[in-house]
Length: 393
Image (cartoon, rainbow, N blue to C red; front, side, top):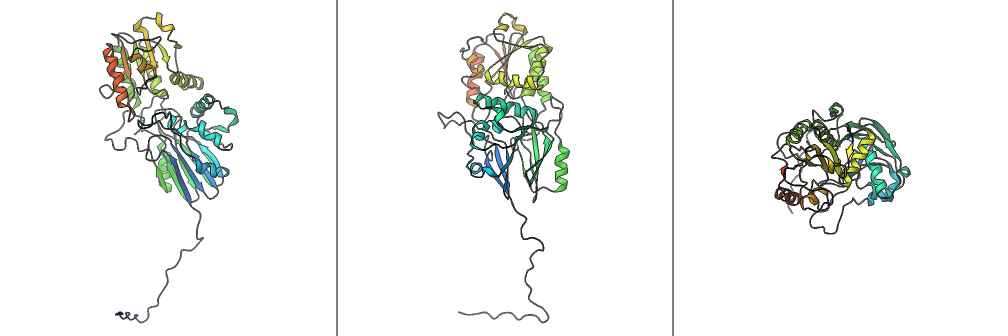
């Protein structure tokens, strides 16, 4: 083996070792454990761990895809939380959509009593879900907070909530302050300058976090690849008002039952044009009941039953119905295929789909639309009509 001679050291130069930084060798580390919702639609749940404390954010469900026959819903696996249950110091819910709270009736019974924090509507919807599954809300530690509250959870976590506009009231993002830095978790959001309730996003808190320095941003990426901006709910309200005002016969409107702002816009338009409002569909009735009780929905007259509207002239009737995703057993699908026991759609009626199909539901929605056309109805749906806008930026 030929060895190369070592270069001579220059005179006056000492070999030095790299110096280690002064101070403690470690200040701990923040672990982020996504248990669902990352790279997928639904099942949103994330655990944050620092040393011997865990904070959990959201607990949603997802719906099965076409290759999952016989499966009703999908829920996150929380083995990690079960194994470390004694370390969980708090659970924060960003808003009341199914993909953020729908899994809670399945997750909470697996864990000890944990302080849960959420806005008034969010916890109102959660209580309804717990009761639906035979659980008693009073047995859980539910704490109502404002969408802009600051919470101290355990020794290591401070949660600074900030309101973000979305397709449901009381929606929040959060700044998680930890010993190693700040994490910004946007939750679901759209940047709506003119929301129906007038409550805009509190972006000043986000700007402040940016000025302080952010270790990590966890952001809603839905619609991120679409150019432009998402239209405001105020624009949708104008389009709905015009469509309802121009209708001759009965009007049937379907949208997501949890979209309280959209439901409010439909009710206001109906009242403005002299129509009585009836609701049909279990989830629509459930969400409306909770929203009315908590003051998130206003009705000048009252909501009518499907039996009561039989004797009202067609020109004075509007029905809010479930079935925006073409679900076979939902109201709109049963109307389209002539299987509803109390209602029917015919010539002169207007059907408004104030929603967009979730990926995978396009075929089911198109089947319903085609059947409605066959019945002689006038059918309005996006993008041909501006009767819907996404809840995401």
